[in-house]
Length: 359
Ligand code: ATP
Ligand code: MG
Image 1 (spheres, rainbow, N blue to C red):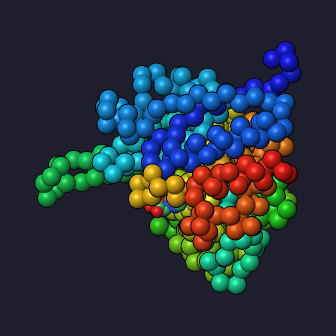
Image 2: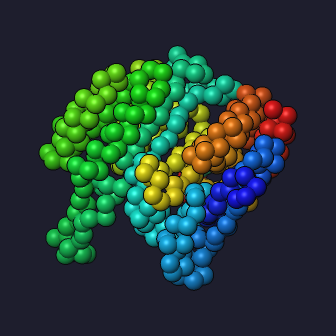
């Protein structure tokens, strides 16, 4: 742009349930930070992809949607899911195609105990738990390989093939070692289950060994996923950066979200580190129909996801401000019910905007 204003085109998919509510909050905060700082301009392209569309028109998305999305600089995603539609349909029609087509091979979920939130882990205080979980996002059990035979008979067999490629494992390992290297403790735990699996996770471990040689300053160890769940609860301070397979990462990151207080503050990003395709930013929680339409949802997870999106787009100052405002509102107890507060979604949103304007 000739004015020197950096412009970023954001595809916005609010989705279903509270996804719609927390997305509205997020856009309000993004507009506020843009007005405050200046120098950049966000354009929001709001799309109706979701279960309501599926129920009315038979598909989650219009034809050509992936090519359309490709033209955006980033994707902000609320949540999808509907009590009337089995979860695997939205997963395989909407979420997984984006991860695979855009090669968003990294799913990253930071987890920490923030000041103002009582820790659920015995013997820890805010700051003690500060993890980054890196989940491989395109392979493993989510590769979509397998099938069913003799359906409905007593001989029925269902197979679900976990696929690991050397290239796929290498790129996630390299990203994990680099992330660990960039953090003060330079500590990485590689999670596996290579005692029970004979191929895929042996490759996983082998590649970890090999890639580790390129990062001699990173201290790393291997953990089996079962033992890892115990360590996360019993010795949380011994962990920093964690890298896991697709399926294990799904489970461990929910555990991490639970340990750090509420799923209402857990945020995540699906990244294409090569920046060939747009990356996607979203809260970890789902559509949560039980609290939908009641102004009860905690918008912080979505807003923090958007802060990560700003950082990814090169707007670090704006990202810092948004994050700081979220942290401050939590520290001051200005929170929704899931964190023990009494504010509504809309009130937390206004608090974050007010704090941001005063920072
Ligand atoms: P989905 O099927 O899309 O995953 P879900 O109904 O399983 O949605 P989750 O998002 O997985 O819901 O969350 C589980 C529960 O946690 C919800 O039923 C809700 O009560 C609570 N919850 C989730 N997100 C939030 C939030 N942002 N604020 C407050 N409570 C939340
Ligand atoms: Mg759920």
